[in-house]
Amino acid sequence: MPARMVVVGLALCLVPGAARAEAPRTFGKSSAQILAMGSEKWMDYQGTKAGQSTGAMTEGMEAYRGALRWRNDGLSRRSKAAGRVGKLRGHLVELTRGLVEIGSYRTGGGTIWANIGAGALSASEEVLYPLLGGPAKKPRSKPHTTAEVKRALEELRQLTETRSREPDVTPAAHAEALKSFDRVRKSWAETEKIAATFDRAGSDNILGFCLEQIRTAHGDS
Image 1: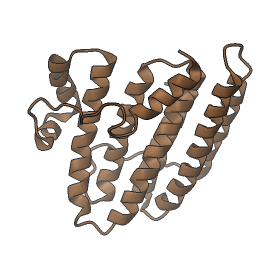
Image 2 (image 1 turned 60 degrees about the vertical axis):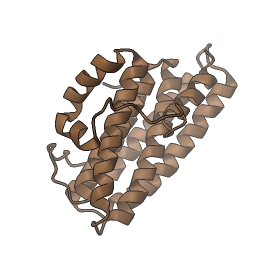
Image 3 (image 1 turned 180 degrees about the vertical axis):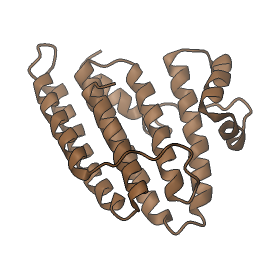
Image 4 (image 1 turned 90 degrees about the vertical axis):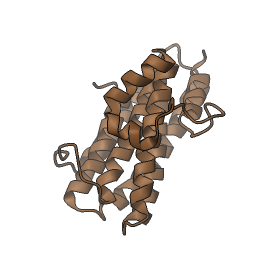
């Protein structure tokens, strides 16, 4: 598949409702029940129903993200941070989309990037949960700085340029990757502003999420 088609296809996979006409299947489980199961048990259960294909796994992650969104939307109705968190959610989604497209471009594509994107979007909802007043279940992220994120982004830009010189890359595919990088940079700029309005724990978790996704696009483990 041409690189540009891979990038466009994966972008659609990350747009709610664009990858398929219907919402991801939950096999009779409510959002509350899915959350009570936890991600690992949910994916095991979902796998027995939908199978173990990449597409089925992506659908399972999307369903778990839907349950997380349901929980966060409930909290937002009584949270003073709802407006900021709503804007942050949009920027993190756009950041994730762009980084998945760049990662796919850099590695030559592959359906694994649909899994990576779906997992990252679920993780972004986990980041939003304590910002809305939910108890933080995961350990606090180690301290991070915006300079650290900016360095990682610059490294990614350089890696993207290096990829353009490889023989299997077309000018059109590279142009699409540069567009994705521009969107990522703009989303990060807005994310940085919002992160600064939260306490250190919230800011560290937001920056930690951004760093993790950027490093994934680098090709780091």
